[in-house]
Image (cartoon, rainbow, N blue to C red; front, side, top):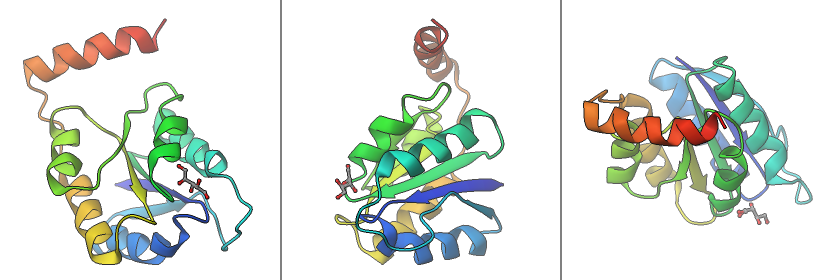
Length: 148
Ligand code: RB5
């Protein structure tokens, strides 16, 4: 599976471990930056690039890290077909995919440490949408708005 990743200066500290986890679990990293730490960079630049990769089906999933995960999530959800959320607990990182078909995980580099980031990324990558009727029904209600 291809996984697009993006990091602003608030999330850059987790770039190495997250890319390692993606590769170690047999997946391919599509790196949308930043490519160096720049305290003046802006999270929408990376979040939107990752979201576009997901929206156009160039990748299966995306991971965006800013300081809190909040800005990344707000930006990514503007792009059609993207279902992004901040998940700093294991249950949400897994269930967000299984029930809500979350396709972009947003994390806060100022909130979680490397072991937690690693755990959350593993859970997000290994989870699959259940496809159950009740979840499809709810997703369809969201998709109707997406297509307006
Ligand atoms: C950047 O300083 C910070 O505001 C950003 O990384 C993020 O936390 C926004 O949600």
